[in-house]
Image (cartoon, rainbow, N blue to C red; front, side, top):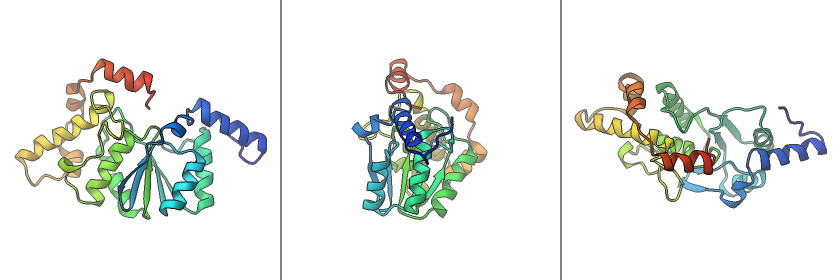
Length: 222
């Protein structure tokens, strides 16, 4: 579906679609906005008034949209329009909350954080899982924080449920830390690209049924 934002009716239809079909209304209630550092923030999918407010308040220069480019989405059309009006960069990234990111996607995260204009604002749909993954990569690649010391994948205050399917990333990082104990000089990106057995890690990960039901069905996380 394509949305025409150039007419009043088109904008009204797109707004209703974004709010109620794409569930953007939930982020009015729980924005899940947090500061990671003096130059980085994370949140759920902002409404357009939330986006304008925080961009102006925080001096944001780059939005990192973890839901990827989606021309058929109403909220994507609004967000792209607002970023252009505000003169900020919008970087579209495809990353999944229930899968282990390939080495290439992790390298792409490194490149994004090396080239972005700061301050940056990272968001996904709920601000819990994908935002947590990318915020972890931000801490590691940009701030030099060891993987063991990152703190962006938590139930409180972010809402990340590690015992659900989304906990696969926690299990993945734990495998790196296990490897690093025997190889103290190991670098995460090299391990991800050349050493990690993603198929084996996928097979060995076990999620909790109730946790996954809450995450996938009740909360309708992507």
